[in-house]
Length: 320
Image (tube, rainbow, N blue to C red):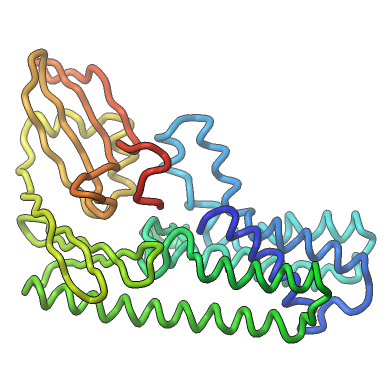
């Protein structure tokens, strides 16, 4: 999910800890735990620092090792031990570790539910896991947790009432979205009469979804609005040739191929050579394929230039 939502959920996890009686009346423990859950809720995304090394490094490492199985246990240790020592509450280290662990696990769980996905099975498997159930930002979840946090911190609301209810509603909402997703996958497959691999991807609107279906020779893309399946574009698959193969060793292409799920590649001849365009069809929007790699070659198939990233403005959809 987005950074703001992760940080907000860190606050409400601290409230849930109060509600379940883990904090007691010790203000030092309460302060340390609030910091622990907020930092823990964001910690896996500290990997964004690799963006300083360029977009290829970012694509390779973001939501990778920092979201892996070992990281689920290392982040709580790195965060809770200094906090327990700094607040002089070493006797409550286990409590701090536990709630920090909950925050880290919940972060990875939420990332797993959106379309970008996460390599949460590392080091056992490098596969990207994405359930396509939640959008990168969920207005309902955000509003629910803002209300609970403000009522608790600003108006002295009862944590015992607020936070079990907020998290209970959150998990019911996730369940409903998962149920919606499963039904819509079947609906798209039926409407297109195909047995291809189908992705149904959520948006900020609860009843507007996008879909991508990959078959042996093409991709189908379209929208679902209030259960109505609307086919928009069909992208034929192109056979690989020497021009396309000449781009495989490019650093940006290798980074892209390690991440992309539904790969579409085209080429065209230009005045001074060739242009090869790699795209991930999962992120199509408005009849365009805005994420991928553009590679320019000369007539001898030498790489002249390449660019990896989004072919859109940062504020334009899709948001992943």
